[in-house]
Amino acid sequence: MKLFRKSFITVAISIAAVLVIFGNLARADDNLIVRKSVVDLTLEEKAEFVSAVKALKTTILPDHKTNIYDEFVAQHISAMGLMLEDAQGPAAGHDGAHTSSLFLPWHREFIHRFEQALRSLNPNVTLPYWDWTDPQAFDAIFQDDLMGSNGEGVNIEIPGLGIAQGGVVQTGPFATANGWEVNPDLHIKPSGETFGSALLRFFQVPPVTQYPIPKEDVDEILTLDDYETFRQALEGFIKPNSEGEPIVGVFQHNYSHALVGGATFDFTVGRPEPLGTMADLASSINDPVFWLIHANVDRIWAEWQANGREGSDYYPASGGLYGENLNDRLWPWDGGESTPANQGPGDILSFLPALSPEDIVTAADTLDFKHYGYTYDTLNATASAPYMQLRTLGMVAFGTVSWQVLQKRQRKKV
Image (cartoon, rainbow, N blue to C red; front, side, top):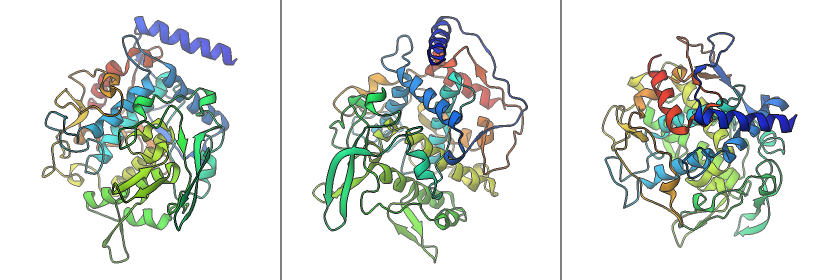
C-alpha cells in the first residue's frame, strides 16, 4: 500500500507538471475546513500530515533550484534579510515578518500558503496547532508518530541554572536517518555560520523550563483592545502585569521557540545564542514544529478578532515603516518592489520562487481569516460565502508561483 501511494503521488505530480487540470476541491457543504489541536489528531491524521510535509521536502518543481519546503524556508529567512544593509526597495531597513504590526498578517498569509501546498497533495490535511497552555500538548507533539523527540548527544552547562541537554534529533520522521535533511545554506545562525544539515533540538534549556504556559496569561492577552499591545504580547516581547503595565521579557510565541530550540545568553555579543534550530528565529522553519506554533499564534489572533475586533479598525492604518501599515504590500507578495539582502554561507536568494508581479498581499487582505477558507475548533465560525478553492491534479506540481497567485485572486472574489 505504501509503495502504491508513493507511486500515485509521483505520477500525479509528473502529469500535472505538464498538464494542468482545474477543478474545485469539493466539501460536503460550504463549511470552513477546521484546524484543530494536536492533542485531538487521530493516528491517521498525524500520519497524513507528516507524509504531506515530507512530500513537499522531496518535490522539486521544473526549473526550480530546490524543493518546495525549502522555498518556504528561503522566504522566511529572506523576510528578515530586508533589515540588512544590502536590502533594496521601500521595505528595506526592517524585518519583513517580525517585531512589528505585520507579524500577524504576514504569518497568516504564509502558513495558509503552506497549508494549501499540503492540501494539494492530500485534501484531508489541515494545519494542527500547538496550544501551549495545554499540559498534554508537549508530549503529544514530541512523539515518533508526529514531530519526534529532543536532540541527543550534547550536554551544556548553564552557569547557575543547570544543564542543557539536546543535539541532533535521532528519532521520529524528521530525523536525518529517516530522510529529513536540512540544507546547510538555509540553516544559519545569527553569525551567518551554518547549523549544519541535521535538525537540532534542546528542550527546556534553563531558564526557559516552565511548561505549560499559564492559560491565564493568554486569557489576559485576549482582553487587550489595542492591536499593537496585543501583537507585542502575543509575539512575546511583553507581558501585562496585574496593573496592565508591560513587563519586558520572553513570552508566548518567542517562549515556545526557545522551549524547543534552547538558547544561552552570551554577554560578549549581547544577544541570545541559539543552540537548536527552533531557537534561531529565521532558520526555525526548518523544524516542522514551526507550523504548529504559528497556527496557534494565528488561532489566538482569530479569537481576539472574533471577540468584537474584526476589520481594519483594529489594525494600524498608518504611522509605521513601509510594510507595517494596513495597505502596504507585504514582501514577498509585493510585486517585486523590494529585494532582501543575501545571508549565510550560500546564496539564499537563489532558492526563492519567482513570484508573479500580480501576487500582491497587504495586511488588509489578511484580516478576515474566514476568507481563507478555514477556522479553528475553538471558534464557531462558518463561511460567509462559498469558498471555492482552485486545484490541479496534485496542485503542488502547478507550482508555488502560479497557485499562490490563483489562490490570492480567488480569495479576493469572496
